[in-house]
Image 1 (cartoon, rainbow, N blue to C red):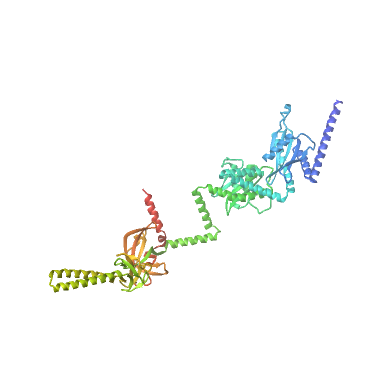
Image 2: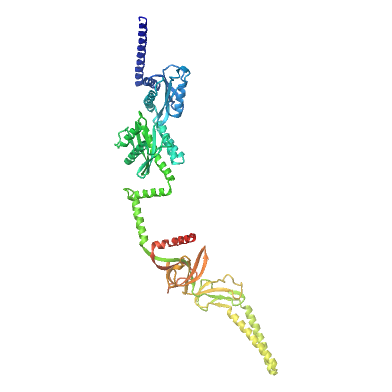
Length: 631
C-alpha cells in the first residue's frame, strides 16, 4: 500500500502540471489574439483557441492566399513545432480545390489502431465568395455527433479569420472581387441554352461561391410563385413542404417589393418576415434572404438564399446577392420569353398592355390608346366620297390626218406640231418642178393635136378627125390630172385647230411617198379624256358619272368631265389589265388643255364609309386568294 501511494500522487501531480501549462498557453493565446501585431500572430493564437474549443486536436494549420499572387502558403501551425504534416496538407489542398469542407478518417499505418482512427478536418475561408484560404485540423477519434460538433465549431471560428482578411484587404480589390463574382454568376446563367439548365447551374454556383446551404429560384406564374430551380438538386418534389415554405417566402418579398433578410443584419425600414421565419423552422437553417428579380417595372421571380445553422449572412454577402439578383432578372425574363409558346407570349403581352392601360402609371400609353380608339371610331362610322383613280390622257374629239398626195420631195414646212392653224392655212409645200414640166409638155402636146384636128377638118377626113379628137381629150385629161396634183402640192389645214403630230422642218428635200401621214390636226377646245381604269375598279364605273382631271403640267387645276363611253377592250400594262374609258369635258373646261397632256383622273362614284374605301382593295384580294385555294 505504501509503495503504490507515491506513484498515484506522482501521476496526479503530472496531470495538474499539464493542465496548468495548457491553461497558461490558452490564456496567453487569448492575450496574443487580442493584441496581435501581425497576421501570423493572429492565426497562431486562433489555432490554439480553436484547438482548445474542439478538443483532442493534435495538429492544425492555417493557409492563406499571398497578397498580390495566386499562390497559397501556410502562415501558422499548431503546435508550433516541426513535424510531418503531409496528410494534413493533402486534405487542405482538396478543400481549396473543391471549395467545400472536408471531414474524413486518416489512413492508419498501424493496424492495431484501425478501430479508433484519427480524423482530418479542413474548411475553406471565403471573402466575397472567393476562396482566400483554408484551416485544417487532425482530431482524435470521437463519435460522429461530436465530429459534426467539431465541424460546426471550426465553421463558427473561421469567421474570425474572414474578419481578419476583410480588414487587411484592399477596398479596391474587394470591390473587384465582388464584381468578378457577380459577372461569374451571370456568365453561368448565360452558358446553358435552356432556362431549366441555366437556372439550376446558376443556383448551384451561387450556393457554392457564397457558402449557402441552399439557393432557390422561383418564377412568377399568374398570381403565384413557382420554384423552378434548387441548388444541387436537378430534380425535386414541387409539392414538398419545404418547397411550399420557400414559395411563400418568395411571395412575401415580392408582395412588399423589397428584399427580406431574416434575421435582419441592418437597420433598414421594417419588412414583414413571417414566411421567412416559418421557412427557417421548416428547413432548420439559421438565416434566409430573398431578393425579387425585376425586369423593368415587372417582378419576374425571386432568389432565396439559406445558410445552415450557426451561420448568418454578412452585409457584404447580401450586397453581392442583391447585385446578382438585379442583373439576373432581365436575363431570366429573356430566356423565359424565348421558351414560351406563342399563345402564352400573346397572353403575357395582352396582360402587360392591360396593366399599362388601366394601371396607375403610364399616362402616355393611356393618351395614345384614347387617340387610337377615337381614330378607329371615326374610321368605322365616318363616310367619304369614293372615287376611282386612273391614269388619263387628253385626246382631240376629232383628229384629221394630212397625208402626202403624191410621191415627191418636201420643199417647205413652215409649221410643225404644237402650232395653232386656221382653216386653209399652208402647213407645208412639196416640190412641184416635175409636175410643172409635165404640165408644159401636156399643154404643147394638146396644141399639136388641136392643129391636126383643124387640118383634118379642112380636108374633110372624117376618120382622121375622130382619131385626133380622141387624142385631144386624152391630153386634156392628163393635163387636168397634173393640174390637180399641182394644187395638192400645197398642204393646208382642213379646219381651225392644233397640229398634234408632225414636223417636216428637219426633213426639207427628203422624199415622201403617196399616202404617208405627214401631220395630224385636232380641233381647238373639242377634246375627250381617255382614262385607263384598272380591272378591279371597272365594275364601279358607269356612263354618266362625273369626275375631275388633273394634268401633270397644271397640278393645281382641276378639269371637270363626264363619262361618255366604256369600251369592252382591255390593254395590258405593267402587269395590270386596264380598260379604256372615254369622257367628255364640261363646257369651258378645255380652254387651256392641249391634246397629248397626261395626268390623273378621278371618277366620283358615291358616298361610302372610309373604312371600306381604304380596305376594299385588300379585302377583294383576300377573297380572290381564298377562292383560289378553297376546294
